[in-house]
Image (cartoon, rainbow, N blue to C red; front, side):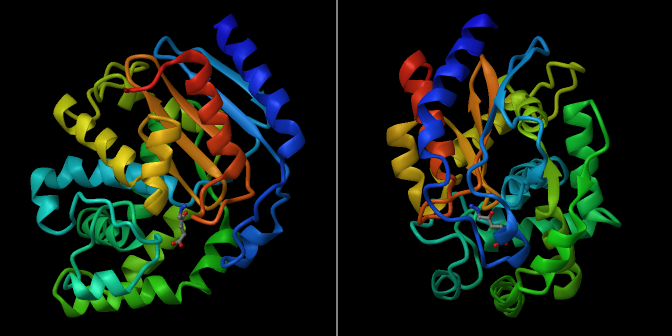
Length: 305
Ligand code: DON
């Protein structure tokens, strides 16, 4: 692990002077209060070791990173039937775009744009009494350290400013692609996005995707290897919305970002990674986070390409 430690220290030193460049998300007012110049990064290996730098133990709002874990739960319950309701293509559009969804008759392009994640939440509403708790409990199990909490202020703030997500749900309901009451799905989705976790915890939680779907801590097969491969493929092609091509070009790993400034990445057969810095670029991805991952794969040569 010493080489990871040195690497993280180098990345931290290179990025410190640039922290705060970009803008924190402000369309959810509570997220606008977060200091932009924070930075943390963690690398978790299958043997249980975690190497960190900066504010890797500071909890932050996971936001769209939760879509990854909700998707895994939905695949566990629905299997391939899920793909009848949500696609597997990059959208080439912002994460909250509405026009494409109407043109494509309420069938979201993929499970990581908001519309697709709302369908996934609807699936979870059909299977769990309190779906957001199922996502949080799943994350606690993967992390294996503590109970995962919600940031109630972020949850309320998002619920009060979720007009676009509500519009998407109503639109998809009109096309017959939502089975549960819109309010219920919206509530579950908003609370799921308000889960708060640290880089250390998320790096551990994503490691099973670097291990063919098997949790290296417990030995549990979370997803069959074939499904884990598909989730990684979706992260690569859709995990950062209309910036997915640029991320593949610069970083070359499956990744999933959130507007809280977190990005998780999977280095197959090696480790899980999480980086956090709240200031975002124009596509809504962490600016320093993307740069940190780019430095990591450039220095090590560990990419999937
Ligand atoms: O629904 C939303 O808009 C937010 N809760 C999540 C969006 C998000 O994180 C997009 N990620 N980059």
